[in-house]
Amino acid sequence: MDSFQFFHGYQFGFGLHYIDFNNIHRPRTPKFSAHLYYNIMKDNGFSLPDDEKMLYGEFKKDFIWSSATASYQIEGAWRQGGKGLSIWDKFTHTPGNILQHDTGDIACNSYNKMEDDIAALKKVKVSHYRFSVSWPRILPDGTTEYINQAGLNYYKKLLDSLIAANIQPQVTLYHWDLPQALQDVGGWENETIIERFRDYADILFENLGPKVQLWITFNEPFIIAILGHVQGTHAPGFSDRPDTLPYIVSHNIIKAHAEAWHVYNDKYRASQNGMVSITVNADWAEPRNPYKQEDYDAARSVVEFYLGWYAHPIFNGDYSPLMKRSVLEQSLAGGLTKSRLPEFTPEEIKRINGTYDYFGLNHYCSVLAFPVDFGEIQHFEADRGVVLLRDRTWLESGSHWLTMTPFGLRRLLKFIKHEFGNPPIIITENGVSENGPVDLNDVHRKYFYEKYINQVLKAYLLDDVNVIGYTAWSLLDNLEWAVGYTERFGLFYVNRSDPDLSRTPKASVSFYSSIISCNGFPDPASGTHECWNSTSTPTPTLTPKPEEPINNVNFLGMKLSAKDAETGLNATFALLIIALTGAISLFIGFFLVKKSSKKSKKTENVELDKRS
Ligand code: PNW
Image (spheres, rainbow, N blue to C red):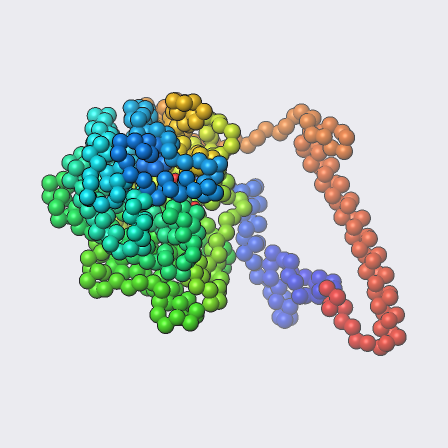
């Protein structure tokens, strides 16, 4: 309990119980820590929080089980078959942009290795495959002036092969490889691109639409805006106007998405009957300090600025009030007379609102947030006004930005359900990377998929979120953008020193495949399950480690058991503290004597407390 702390008196309370020293009866009130400590004693340690316990059960019938890739990351053949150049061809060929000077010139050579990729998909037993179309492969200069038939044929053949293998396609129209010719006239900054994108979409719907039921217009507009147009670490590599460019670019992307959706709705829906939507990405954000309202508000801003930026206009109509307010306030703080966030006209709001058939979500990890006032700075980061952190206990991956936080996916799904009117949700990307030496036994990926997919199951069964699909990023190790081939997200290892770029399944392939075959997680307590591949375990149970019997720890020159070494270490530590306390007391005693002699000389009033 709180008590007298010598020099500090009653200033600091070390107690599990708070004591009111102003009250003559000295009442005791348990603090939060008292409850915490009680639970640790009761459980004789730390029990698994409910959040982390496995839930057994199945996903809905006809659940979409998929794996994904993107054209620039896997196709290669950068100048084959009449393809035009993309902004990523130019960006990777500009020295200094990509780690180890990697490019997508050859990538996984998927343009010429279609059969290998289909064989890989069959091995995973996915029901769907998400791939993207390279815009400059279809329209080399970005416009419909010239349509490259060889490009269309490649994707038609891919679709036919998939369908023959009983795998349904999920096709992304734009996964970042803009025709360089369009960048040369301003790229996403030039609003004529809205028409260009609509025409491109029209061609794809017309030519490929009869074989496709699931379309994604844009992949991760947030990453296009921020990495491509604020940080400059992605193509086209701009970082000179972080105050306005991300907003202009995003404004045009949202309108381009809406136009593509309307083309499908007006011209193709009746005959093709597919679904068209956009894929947005978001981290989940938690308050850094769960006892501070402002940290909750900061966490909310993070998610609103990630997916809300795009989902609000498309699912609810117009930018969110939070986003409008934040950008306006920061613009005014910088002396501007109006917001840097462009406005939609009432007609535009109407035309954009409702242009979705499902909610496409890419998610990888969570962050901790707290607010920061950036003063007058005119920058996207200042508009959002938060600082992001990661909890040190979260497991790391092969990518510095990706720490494993399965709980965040369930919370994000619940947030989407409530914020955007309970739409059907397809998780269009989720996955984890490794870097460094190759190990085909990718236990971290099995762990990641088990924990994250289980959280999706909880969202579906316990929170009634309408999740209709899950996509593992990625089928293959591929070009991970600015970090080249150093970070590997694949279910399959691609051997880059083999000229044939052979694909080898990692251990996670059979694990993910079992989850797919079972359509979820069967309860091991109810016996063995035919759907579960015997090489993968559904629930790695945590059995306590036995005491280590062998003397294998070197402690001060002696061979001791780990337990004895620990005792020895504690004893040494205790002795050290006693010695240190003694020395400190001596020092303080000496100091006090000197001080009191000075005080008596000068008759000064020195408060002891001030020394601390
Ligand atoms: C997504 N970040 O991109 C993309 O859709 C994929 O092409 C990519 O390979 C995958 O995630 C893994 O990175 C991201 O820095 C790129 O936070 C970077 C970030 C997030 C997503």
